Amino acid sequence: MLKRIVLITGATSGIGKATAKVFAKKGYHLILTGRRRDRLKEIKKNFEIKYATRILTLCFDIRNSEAVKKAIKTLKPGWSKIDILINNAGLASGLAPIYKGDIDDWEVMIDTNLKGLLYITRWVSENMVQEGKGHIINIGSTAGQEVYPNGNVYCATKYAVGALTKAMRLDLYDKNIRVSQIAPGAVEETEFSLVRFKGNKKRASIYDDYNPLRSRDVAKVIYFVASQPKHVNIENILLMGVQQASAALFDKSGRRFDTQLDQDSQL
Ligand code: NDP
Ligand code: 8X3
Image 1 (cartoon, rainbow, N blue to C red):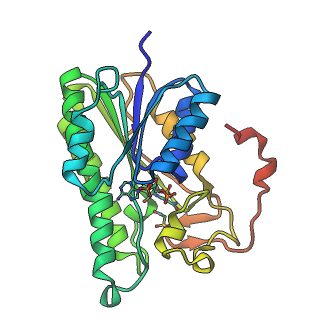
Image 2 (image 1 turned 90 degrees about the vertical axis):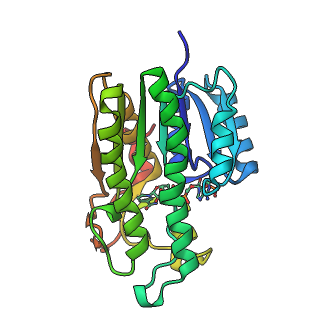
C-alpha cells in the first residue's frame, strides 16, 4: 500500500515538530518545512532512524511567495501527491497596544500567519483538487475566537485563519477535500513565547504558574482530526488546558498537574 504523505509547515519546533513525531510513529511519510536547515536535518535523521518513515525537508521562508511556489511545484514524483497539509507555521511578534505597536511586527505576523498560509495552500490545494482528495488542517488559536488586550494584530491574523478555514471549506467541500481548524489555547514545549518576546527568557516564562497544553497534546488532536473516516470532516476544534477558560482568563494559582507522571497521555 502506498504510504500517505503529510506536509507540515513550521516543523522545526513546538506543535509542528510534535505533530511530525505523531505522524511518523503512525508510518506516514513527511514533508517538513521551516527556515532552520540544521533543525530540519536533525529531525529527519532522528525520526528516520526511530520510525518507519521517510522524510523530505524543504527549507524556505513561508513569506516568500516564489520560494513556496517553487518548493511545491518542483516536488518529485513520490512526494507530489500530498494527502494532508498542516498549516502550522506562525508566530506572534510583540504584545503592545495598537497606539504603540511596531509596524515591522505587524508585517511579520500578517506575512507569516496569513499570507504564508495562503501561498502554500494555493499550490497544494490545486494538486489536491487534481487528485480528487486531500485534507487541509489549519492551526488557529483561542486568539482567533476572542481578542485579548494588546493581542490586536496577532489575534486578527488568527481570526483570519478561522475565516479562511470556512472559506476553503466552501470552495473544497465538493472536491472531496476536507478542511479543518484546530484552535489551541496556550501551549508550552514550543518557542512561541520566546519568539513573541524576541528572546527575552524572563518575559517569555509565562507558563510557570499554571499548566497550559503541551505541544504533544495538540499533536494528538491534529492526528485525531486527520484519522477520522473519509466521510467525516471535523471543521473546528477549540482546546485549552484546564486552567485556561478563555483567551485571557487563566487560573494562575500554580501548576496543578504533574505532567511527568501523566502516563495516560504519553504518545
Ligand atoms: P514555535 O515557535 O515553536 O514554532 C513555530 C514554527 O513556525 C517554527 O517551526 C518556525 O520555523 C515556523 N515559522 C515561523 N516563521 C516562519 C517563516 N517565516 N517561514 C517558515 N516557517 C516559519 O511555536 P508554536 O509551535 O507554538 O506555533 C505553531 C503554530 O501554533 C503557530 O501558528 C501559532 O500561532 C499557533 N499557536 C500556538 C500557541 C501557543 O501557545 N504556543 C497557541 C495557539 C496557536 P523556523 O523558525 O525554523 O522557520
Ligand atoms: C497563541 C496563544 O494566548 O498567546 O495563539 O494568543 S495566545
